[in-house]
Image 1 (cartoon, chains in turn cyan, orange):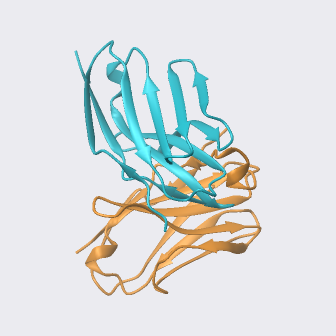
Image 2 (tube, rainbow over the protein chains, first blue to last red):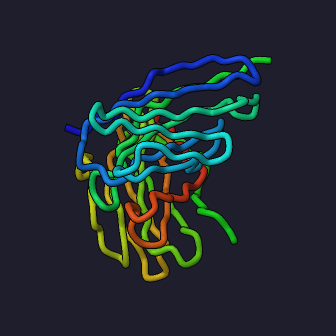
Length: 110
Length: 115
């Protein structure tokens, strides 16, 4: 079945690292993605990882993929107040269809 | 380069009415996808169009329909509105196939409230 799960909330202090976790169920997913949604806005692609990789780093963002456990994580280093948003992981199960997780609301406090 | 444009941004309808939402993709993008976002169900895939053809459809009733025009602009229609159709409807465009890079460009959405 198609089900992507995330924890609902994460609160971190400014300057600390944030780790947002995601579990997915479709082992045939080609790509896995992280999107960010700020209030009143659409979704913005942050990064993606191909399923044959186990890690991808892009500036402050690090994506870890454990394909055996179907676990994906997003680490944000030196988290800033501007990082406060809802973060969605997503998997591609068909060529043009994404299954999104429930979203994790990240709150950064000073 | 202009982003994905969705109109209207906000609208209020009553049960039983129908609604049409419009999406203009980024220039040059040929694929348009629609998603419904609600607090209870999260983001759910509605359908995807490419070159005026529906390539994929989510698990929604037949009241939800869409189309794409030759200029890649897309519309979605919901007939016989129900209270549960209240949601943020997001349109996304991409060059061709989502799975190539995963980069869907999203509009800001049309927020529909059904009374």
